[in-house]
Length: 413
Image (cartoon, rainbow, N blue to C red; front, side, top):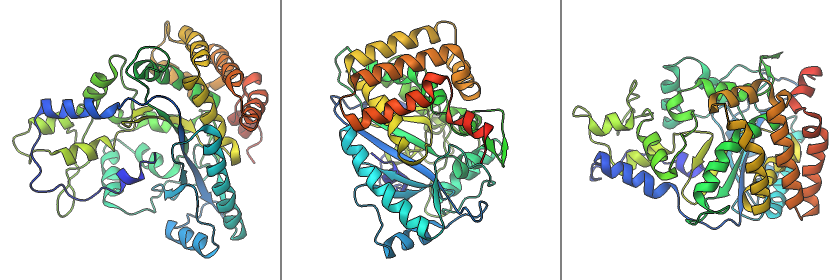
């Protein structure tokens, strides 16, 4: 379920690839975004900042880390290892039941963490690097183009690329039927739940060594980048709204055999209609889709929840287990929908995301919805290990209307 394979597809499109019409592009996006899959499995893509406690400002080269892990026979065995542009380490699971997902990733995290500790390094589970200024250490044509595109709008893109980390939850898309397992219902629930996930797992209140105005500064950073590729997808028919969103998002790069061109303000729809640029191909469209980062993203056979701050140690499993329970158990899904409905009566998505990132669980309506969702997830959980993790987090934070961000600000050590 990792997007690493898409990240690696940075070769120029084949010369013989047929150009697309606007109708062709819309149809391809709509058809490929939601492949019906009955809910059964979950996946996780979990990121941590890689730091040195002896020098918090040091950035560690990913190739050095991979070599170190190989020498120590500590390369992941059950998950896929990759690195973010600023050097953050990511482990990605295969699709599996929640307990299997936990066992696989946690075993690899523990092995990697122990090997790094022997070298004076640690995995830091925070949504935003609390000290370092952003600096990219992974070199690729893709990331160079991304940096150039985001620089057109300010510095937030560099902070996003190099200084943020998250827990991304991947859930089966759902079926074509209506009801709790239907893809339209799951797509809608994901969007209604998103601000609650931002708030409940807010864990990035520090920036450049000082408290920011946000409990999830990571969310603030993501809100500040190019909105055509990062804002939530509007409500409506999932396939049609996603296709329109994708075509109206700015193009990150027009790839060529030499240096890629980073256009200014060119949407994919503009490119399709252009008479001065080479016609885009399906390869260009596939690449474009891999550069879109809304909080909820369709990935064919699964939905990706991208709004959750990174968590320390094994607690990455809590948002994964919470989401799996709320989406895959009909009674929990019904309880979540009931709890979330009042939030959306008189509020927009932008308003709720802002409240979630700043007040988090100090916002009474969001806190009430979070408590109801955690309670429903606990009631649906049958695995004792997963239930214990959910219960600990609920008692430590959600039941007290607090998040890890509150603890970090009161004791930033």
